[in-house]
Length: 399
Image (cartoon, rainbow, N blue to C red):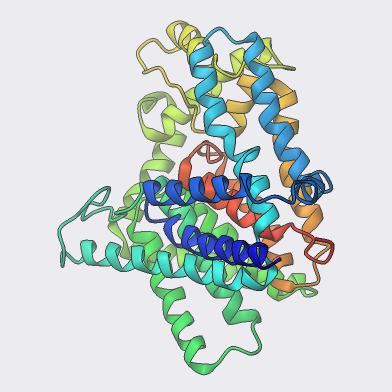
């Protein structure tokens, strides 16, 4: 008993470190993950852990999603690339169930605090680069200061941090004046940071998050929520557009490249549209089981050579729905969507407002941003998704 207690405290300590390192370093996060997994394998109580996993429908959906990728290797031509994709999907069968069995309700606030602290550090570094106080480092540039990861991952993760801060401001009735002031400052500074960096998907996610939290605040007053959203979101957008050159440039480019797609096929937005259109050709031919887990690059190259020979080939359509539909057909898409279905369903079972609110918000925001990239394949965003899900949808009263 004493040994189990010590091991549990060790797990909680490691989880807090992981929450802190997730947005900062791939190596550091992976190192902690390896330590957690090794300790878990030798921790005993396997029947209890197994019962926890098989009695949660989200866990089962996650495992099935991975297994479908594994089965998809049977009809793939490029086995090497298929194994690469399966390796990227290991979070859903390896890490997710492990985290689910070791997270503890009493430590959730510590996980969140460690994550917010890490985002605060990235934000400070971002501003220091932007104001040219320090030299740009790693991924950062003065015009797009996202030092620890690309803006593709940074802005969605920043949006989650803003949600946590806003939820404390709006719903924590026991919040002190000092903490309220501190969180209000961070809410404003993080929002500004959102628009001096270049992640358009994260910015769309930010606006969606604002709409969601307003609906959560005006729970029974939908008209009032819609009225506030109709003024607040355009107000934030207009302010950001007129004060941030990078945001204005990215918005203008997105609008131009969408409206005049035929003339801008080589642009970031144009390529995403092209990837989707070309991929649809393969999806129509293989609607049920897809082309196989590893065959997206091969099949896309064939179609691209015919339809758009002047444009580059790709291994990733920058759209999670398109990628899964082409690789694994309707079977894969339904399996993936079942994860989000059970997240939303399980969130309603919680009596804790934060768990319930964020339990609904997490899948909704991922469903939005997956339209612009394969966010369940990226290290940072997939790890964030799995880590948060491990405690948001656990029945702590039962286990």
